[in-house]
Length: 313
Image (cartoon, rainbow, N blue to C red):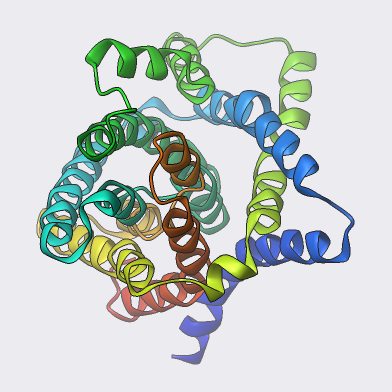
């Protein structure tokens, strides 16, 4: 049992250590909010799309394009979205419902989930996780736009507006560009692949440092009961729901592990951006992000520990 526990920590600690490094660097004044903002844009627009592109380009198509697993992931995420919204109706003030629902279901899969999957399963985790990240980005954009539009008229939920956001998303562009090249087994020049690897290697450590640099102690101190409830939905109820749905059809090992890591990832930082743009309760959004990020080290480690003990992963 001790060996299983230590193996679990070897997956989660390196990822969250980088988050705490970012928080420490911000505390020491070695990085500031301007750095975090610029670096986050660099990750979103350049390094992360390159990482997704490179991982899919090198992947075995039969492994990366796991339609069944991606389908289960989409179903679980959508079901959780509906359940969270129903939960919020009697418990949240009308003006906070959109922010609560988005924070409770929208995970930081493209960074934390992908980093954990890559750390635990190597190339398989990176390639399969890249496809899952691309799929969930589209779904999250649609569902978030809908729930925020219901409670904030300043947000557009028009299909064309959502489609425009999806088609302009650099992460989606990186994934879509790689799929036909992977299918046709196109070989890019070695120098180009090496340069791509250099750029892609910046993604996860830089993104995790930016998450740490964005954490606000004041937001954590002012966290409300609603922020804790949303965090529990994100970190506990969503991954448990996913495991209960995925185990009966026979998902095991890397497939089940990656599904758990993606569903159990903390609330996405972009939820704060969208809440603020919508004129919603940005303090609640920030609190959900901080609380879920801090608690996710414990919840993800505990979940992996239980799954390993049950010999499911």
